[in-house]
Image 1 (cartoon, helix red, strand yellow):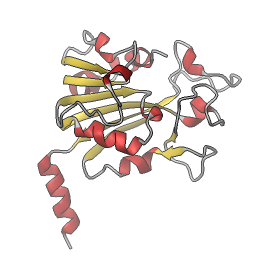
Image 2 (spheres, rainbow, N blue to C red):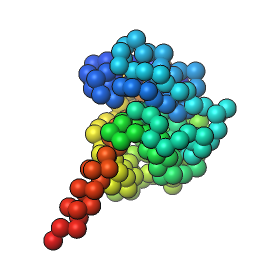
Image 3 (tube, rainbow, N blue to C red):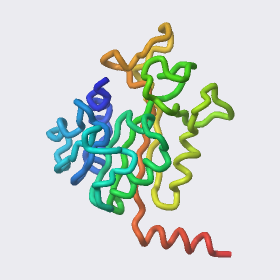
Length: 208
């Protein structure tokens, strides 16, 4: 519920969003009625932002979007709805320019689903996410560190954060994202590597 708006105050206190992440032209995948572009005044280096939602096509493939088109890709609470998050991230990186940033927010399985899956709060959720666990209660759990490691050859992980600053752990079980404050999620930010950086990584791996 209006997750981009909830994130605004937090992001304004991190100068990297204004100076590095939301810079240039972007695409907001699964933005619904709460696009990040409505806050362009707060991020003065933000250019045009294409809003992408259900009417625009399958967010997993972004078939009508050409490669290396955008300076940044933003998506809030969309990845958990994809049939295959690995394929989705591959295409979200595909449409990103080298050195561009991918900014993604997803629900944390313990803060949002709270031990029950299929979800009792959003029936379209196909996956749950956790930073890292030896074992999860969810049969559809994705270990985020393992997921991001799959893309280490083409993207640098800059930030992974559990968004629980406004979460109230002592309350009884309910969907806290329905409140104006709780994010109950995880945010991660990747920077797409340049061709030179990828080549250097390849040479490093081949070194004896």
